[in-house]
Image (cartoon, rainbow, N blue to C red; front, side, top):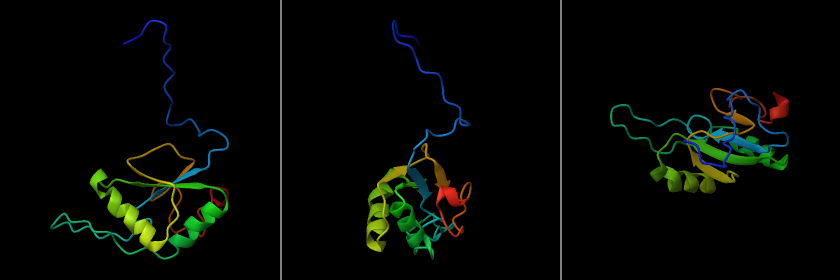
Length: 124
């Protein structure tokens, strides 16, 4: 539907790179920061323990001027539990989002591998 006098922006392709200077780094929660605890029998998915080395890598990102957004496929009603987990273990973050968002890089099983020695984009 078109509104008279309003020009809709061209749709962005998923292949369009992020703008220069973007400092947001999206980090997955489960299986990247926290161990998997999903029980296929019960469907329960409590918060797992922190995965080794991830806290230091998050702090390294912040020390280099990056902003961290934690993204998760968990439902929105888990938001406060995820936030409490991050604060309990001292993880730096600027935002928590359910679902995917545009970021310079995703730290998960599909972009920068969580097992990489550094999560800095320039180190990849």
